Length: 257
Image 1 (spheres, rainbow, N blue to C red):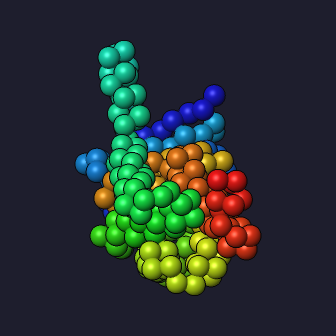
Image 2: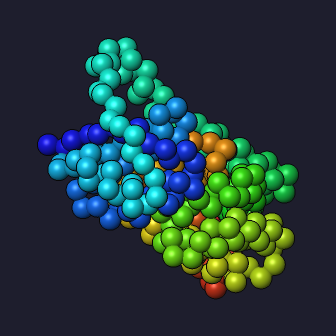
């Protein structure tokens, strides 16, 4: 049976979380964990079958921080509280869904203005708007994004500078899609970059880690989930489709339109 411990700590920033991550991840008894730095007690919540306060305390101490004590279990929530929490969980993705709706609407308006709907152009405009928008949110708090991204991206974990460079890669891809320059190289770069990004997301999902998704930087508190994976794989699929279109002629011909 999975056991849960909630502990008071002095982990008070994203850099602290990044520092303690390799030590907690390396502990085999820990299935998943997360830190609520917004809570005055800087709560570290740990789940696992055979976890103990001593084991967790040792891991946190090795990272240079302290466990200040155990938090007793909260009273059982009422059915109304549980329902409210469930609604809150479901609406966590509201900013991402709203943004996706705006991007799709923008692409449709551009196609209406052109007078005829062209799939290749629509995908190019969507990908350009996607990368420019997501880069904007990441650059609002570059350091915060980098700290969050390093928690799950396979390259950023080993090369911290990559986490700081990544938003500028997205910015460059966005500009390239909007201007239409070197489309072959742009789509190939997108295919590679987003495929690599997907690996870290898949690993986190398989490990059932409760961490923040850095796709919209630190502006919104989006949890890592299959939604993040869909976002990455969608861009991989569109880049692959654009490469296919580029080497086989107009997509209208391929689709028989």
